[in-house]
Length: 185
Image (cartoon, rainbow, N blue to C red; front, side):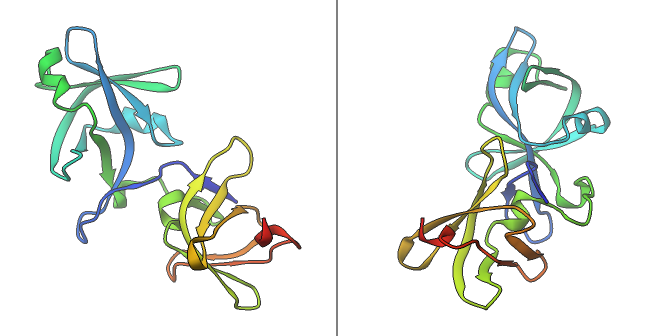
């Protein structure tokens, strides 16, 4: 069971849900290139993209046309058409670059995007309420569900098949069979 990194919903609009695939961090060079943090487990997806949606911190959206890209270490360098100077590219710094939810890559049956798990109700197999998933924390090993419980208590629950025995993203429900002591940590 893998929580995929293509992660966060970039905006909440019932008809046009967006999923962020990169975040513009800074400009690069003199021709309007941007260095972006990769927010997807599928960086090859930039190869078949002609357009992305830039979501500004204010929530405003703007469609941008991808001219070229290349991967550099754990970042992606993006060049957009009509953004041919540092000054033009600076306007996109801080934006999340997104695709429509309907354009996300289809996962295997037992795989989920992080954003599908956020806001899921978590309960034990006996029906005891634990709380709601606030985020998925990637630590390098098994991803952890960060669950906000009653009275603000926080639980870290490994996203492992033996613990998360049922995940129903349609119903926004995760049933867990926690080992003794896990919920007391």
